[in-house]
Length: 461
Ligand code: HEM
Image (cartoon, rainbow, N blue to C red; front, side, top):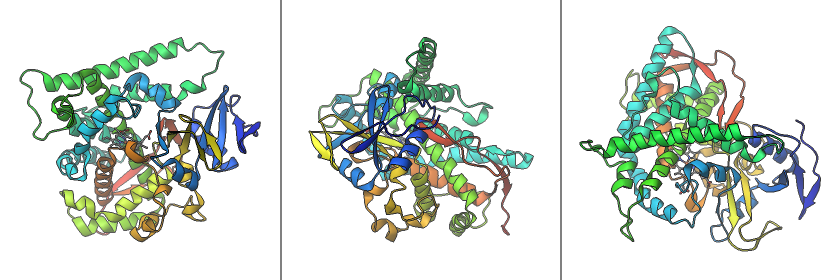
């Protein structure tokens, strides 16, 4: 539905009532409002006001940890219905947040990626085997589906020693279907139509949430069963089952471990798979950038058809990493985060009471004038070291901010850089359907219906 004009103004900020414009892509709607009304506006839906901000100065203020902290906004409040006080959805003052954070942090330091590297490589090879078959048969690949298979298997195996076996199935693992429906339920819950009965929707949601919990119980049971062989390297599950908190010596309780496993299975794969899908889209649409990535991987792996990327190799793929950053700028898959005032304060002239929150609209922060005159242009040189050093760190927030920023950032970047490098080294990517971007939002965003044709590269390519 067309967007209405502002109906009101609050402290000089336009208020737009979108109650009459229901949508199943709320993000795109808010982006449209930001394009029309600028770096701060209030979106009103059924009498509930949300302040959206996207200007660099406002986000710089919101990133001040002394004045603001993470807010669990309305959609995360709904995700709490199935992830409770897991790391992502916990309130910062809930005891399990600090406890799980302290226990799990060491597992996400850069050095720990060395431990996950072999598993990531193993799963990357599963994807390559599947793509080789498609390539030989001359059939295109469904990019977001296969990236999701890869990232789910990686977090399952690396985090919990559990094999989802996604590449041996024609359809995604049923956990993924339930998860996608739960996220969609959470996302659309606050824009419900007051005249409609949602009992059936809610019952279906409960069934999906229960199913996800049962899958996780299976993952935990596989580890704790008598005679279960512990993994060679300590993983997230091992840490949670065994490690005690450095200061009080207690462990996480079983209910919380289940919530953490659900949290990591969700947070650990949806966003990375979106990033990889958007990155392949950007490369196929920008042959000059693609050639630079190819040159970089060819320098490392030559024309070896089956290179064995080492842990150190991934750090050397600097330009590939720039491509991923530029992708995260244009299409941040977790497209927003919310911040609440610790005390009564004023945000760029807008008075805020303690506890009041504002949502950062990351895709529009990433198009702020600080990014130059043509922010829509895909240009990985924006992340060359000199360019990065010259720019405010608050201009780029795909992983959120502060102590509640993404714990899995290094994990995601290591996994994505390796896979992207391997794919570009091996295949020519063919935009066989002249794909036009269509964004699908299920809380996170992905390119809907994006398929690619593939051909093996030869030394002449
Ligand atoms: C938090 C984005 C990959 C685990 C966050 C937040 C963002 C984010 C924006 C902060 C949300 C907020 O402030 O409300 C991303 C992106 C990823 C990615 C764009 C991929 C490119 C991962 C991976 C894992 C992970 C691979 C785990 C292996 C988490 C967890 C939190 C989090 C547990 C909550 C941390 C806390 O509050 O203590 N992520 N993430 N993420 N992410 Fe990620």
